[in-house]
Length: 140
Image (cartoon, one colour):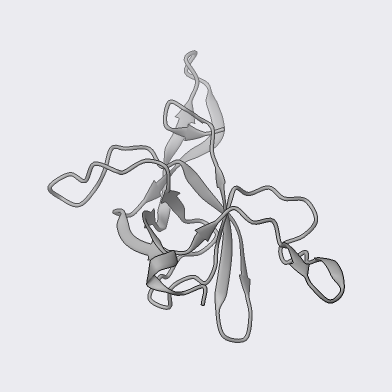
């Protein structure tokens, strides 16, 4: 039932393709950090919920499940990940903003979520994404 079309929303993801030059401070010092490079955004329809994994069970009362650990460091759960979606833990998402796509397929719109965890079951994969705080296009 989670994969029903009526439960899905449109979002965009981009895959990590490598890293760019090293970030330099205002004083010209090397920081040891590199700017990541991502591919072009790809539109995908997913079931994104804000649930924490706690459900109610009419027979036994409250049931707690910790599918992704006790510490919740994410805002959305995407479950299931579409079969044709090759995302991994280095991917990024545009969930709350719509990226403005350039004629070459790229975007200058900064992403607003990163993947924090991907989990697999027998028949499907699920992931959590967390909102990022950005400063000058760099995840901080």
